[in-house]
Amino acid sequence: MNQADIPFFWAVIPAAGAGARMRADRPKQYLELAGRTILEHSLDCFLDHPQLKGLVISLSADDPYWPALSCASDERIIRADGGKERADSVLSALLRLAERGARANDWVLVHDAARPNLSRFDLDLLLAELADDPVGGLLAVPARDTLKRASADGRVAETVDRSLIWQAYTPQMFRFGALHRALADALVAGVAITDEASAMEWAGNAPRLVEGRADNLKITRPEDLDWLRQRWSTRG
Image (cartoon, rainbow, N blue to C red; front, side, top):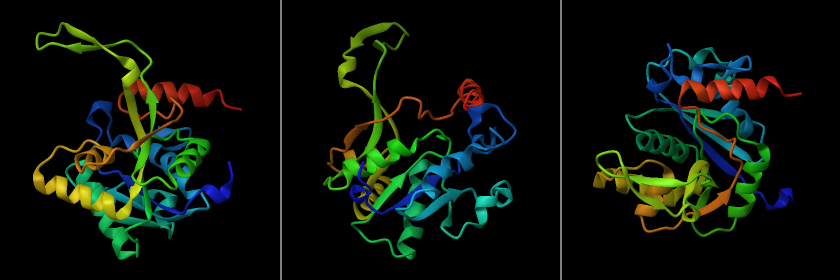
């Protein structure tokens, strides 16, 4: 992959969630993985990238864990106030980027705080594939298993054509101006936004799917972290 094909970009990490399904004593992004926090691993792929212009992390106002991390003093990282929902946190981060001089046509990549196994190859692939795209897009993985649509009583209503179904991952990559406008308008309209692509879809766009690695998983439940710890313990 030619480095000249990879554009400069801003990164946004919404990290204000509590991660209640992990049943832990702290937000899941601060749990330990290979001697560091999940969040530190999630940041690494961006902070190590030469095309990074700056990174905004959205945190709870009373977050006691972030200041203790060594990366908290990195001058490239800007802190923003997190919101109740993911969309609120991302919009808050975009406002901070505007203060730092982000322009409408700049690329912004939004990545989950609890997705620590993003590979540099996948990041570069996303950047290169979407560099000239009129909309932007996201890393995703085609569905592998047979999918069932459930009825209200918990029975199978139908089998879904899995060839049309993809799992949405992150990073998700869109132009600063278009993403800011889509999120702001969707929140004013009271639309439920689950990720940045859904905001862009609501605004009438069709984000592009870029196939990435299936192990770029989001840590949501204890077994996710157990799997990743076991996988990482066998490295090298």
